[in-house]
Image 1 (spheres, one colour):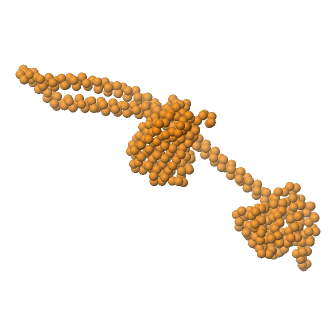
Image 2: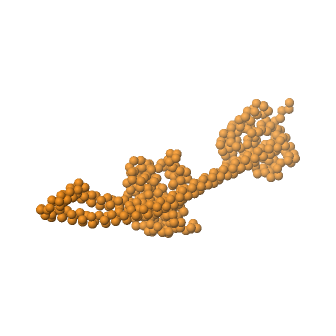
Image 3: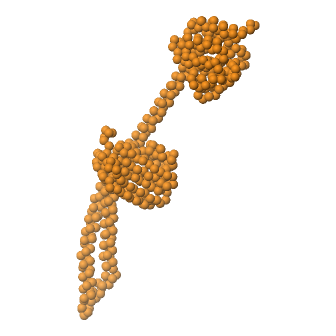
Length: 455
């Protein structure tokens, strides 16, 4: 067996590297290779030949600084000698592979050790490949070319995975937007149908209510002469002569008895009260009918200047059956101008906000409605003394389909639709909430509206 010294190995390598041109290496390379060896001769030789083959090389003769080079330069391949002072190639390889930032880097071990067990150990723990000293120039370049192809394939796979992940995210976003649009269209169709139904019901109710109200008025007028007649009868009874024929006296006594048994005085007074209460009830029904008309705005498909307070009031009346058992409503209306808007859409926003406020109140609480303006915008705040919204949910409440209500109790579209409606009006919705104390939604609307083209 011929013993070969390290200097002889280096000389053989240097003298034989001229044959590297015969290896079919790619004509264009963009790989970066870090070479770590405490032997300057071997370091320069490998670096020179790989550079000549088209690769970018980084030389590191001090193994103690090798990890700093790896972290700073992020090479594609590391070629490291095994036996080095202070830190050997195995420890360096383990350090590279255990670091999340560098674990993907291909590690080629360079060794004169021909023990198979050591090579297997290196390959099983940290090394991706190894080169046996003395190094064959052809094998060096072939191994590097092969490894660099893997690097490029890995890089391409990573890029394609990134593109695929982006495509999946875009698809998920588009799918969510499609679902949101479909749900909003269904909700808008539903609200339009409800508006048409409300307008139809209002029309059907309005006619008979008008008849009832008119007839009650006539009954009230008819009672007045009856009262006068009854008063006159009583006056005649009191001024009647004491001596009358028996027949007349009997008739008068029978009439008196009938009046007392019937309690005509009570009946006349009670009829007046019944007519009064019935007319008040019919006025209430007429007001509800008008609120249904105002709320639906079926015939209003274009923007118009509308009184915000009228919209809030009609919405309160529509939702009163939900409100009256759970909340006391406090109104703090300011002096605000009319707003250029789609009234029916704003009424839908008010309804969503008010119903949410009612549902947030557990037993009995307050809902405070406040309006004001700053000459450019009108503000409507709707506050409740309910359970409040947890901080982690505040950023999600306007997302489509987000709801904290039990399954079947909410669609998660109410606030999302409200936000979109206000955004389309050129406005904004702000929310403040504290768990256990309540929530305030503040709607900001431009007085002159938002132009159709989005300006």
